[in-house]
Image 1: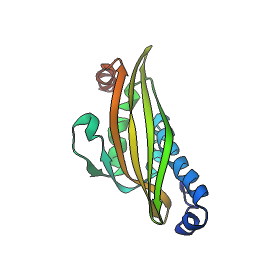
Image 2: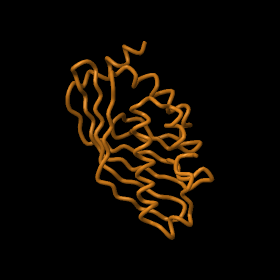
Image 3: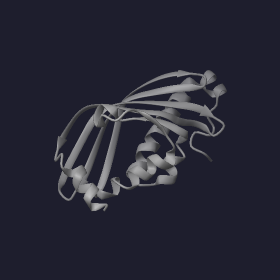
Image 4: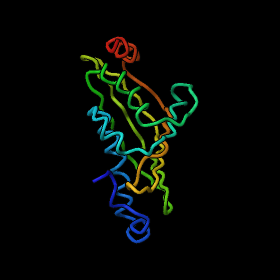
Length: 161
């Protein structure tokens, strides 16, 4: 069964609490799949094109990108860390029948050996009700702060070369 496949417009109207919990579960599945490097499962949580926006951290403009291209970028970088661990919490959901926005706080720890680099911020994740269920359509990270060893991303890149 596709991620969120049982969720439909009817369910949102008749069982909003169940749908809200399921939306959070999809977002959690997305982050867990990234940390597990389960790229097929990560891809299964997204629409055919996703508006990816890390501009507050990277300075690069938001862009519509295919899940395959998003995953290719992450797969060429994230395995350079020994492990990553995303934690998301404090959820607020705005929903209409065919779209929902999940707002949450997040913290991502990136490990190389005994060193850690942590990034914290807020996420705005728009999900769309599709024939495959609710899928991530837009993904925006609003950077708040980083701590730890800020050279770890460079080390991770070098390890992947």
